Every structure is written in structure tokens, then in C-alpha cells.
Image (tube, rainbow, N blue to C red):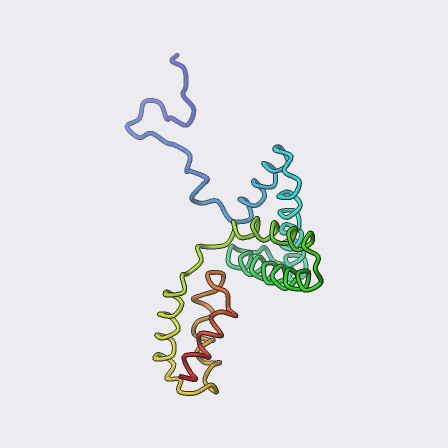
Length: 172
């Protein structure tokens, strides 16, 4: 009997292979795998940031009694990034550069799990399109524009930046 090769069906025209984990890997699985690799490599700062992220994801799942999908995980990461930005500004105002550097390192780790960020030109283009689509004419219509843009830009752009762009557009 010939040796059986892994993942190959003998006496068949079709060769079966396992799908690549890279393409269908959920964000949660990727984070978990990265945590394991950080443990093996003894990267303490990276491991600490990933553990914080895993804890935040677990907390959200327990609170809402659901399994989070990738979009919800991106929302959790976005919230954590916003907290880090706020902390950095507070630490720098208090001349605590050591703590600000720690937060920046955590931000770097978290940013790796975010989708590709849009450029400022792309954001301006989407804002202009949303203003036209919503028929916004004044600052009172800003909520309509934000309502159109939020689903499109979730996790792909800083919503504070988007908000300032909309304000500039509507006040012009």
C-alpha cells in the first residue's frame, strides 16, 4: 500500500487541501494566536497589550451574552484606542512621558488589528458625498451626515477627525 500523503485523496482526480487559515481567520483567532506567539517570544509589553484587548473582548461578550464578530471586535479596539489617545494627552500634560510612552506602545499593538485607515483625501471625498446625499445645508444637519458616514467609516477613520471635516464643510 502506498504511503498516504496528508490532505490528499488517493485514487482521485481531485486533490483536497485544507483552506488557508490566513484568509478565513477571524480577528479573535488572530488575536489569540498573536498572544500565544508573544508568550513564546517573551515580548512582555506586546503580551500585556494583547491580554488587555482579550479581556476587553471577553468583558463585552459576557456583558452582552453574545459571541462578538469582527465588526464588534473592531469597535472594542477603536474604543480602546480612543482611551489610549485620551490617556496620552493627560500624561503629557502632567509631564509623565514614561506613562505616555507605555500608552503609545499599547496603541501600536492595537493598531495592528484595525482595518486599513483611510487617507485624509478619501475622508474628504466621503464627507463631500455624504453632505450631498443627505442634503445637509447647515450645522443642524450634521447628525444626518454623521449617520450616513458612521457605518462606512467604523474602524477605518478617527470619527473626531471626520466630525471636524463635516463641521468645516457645513460651515463653509
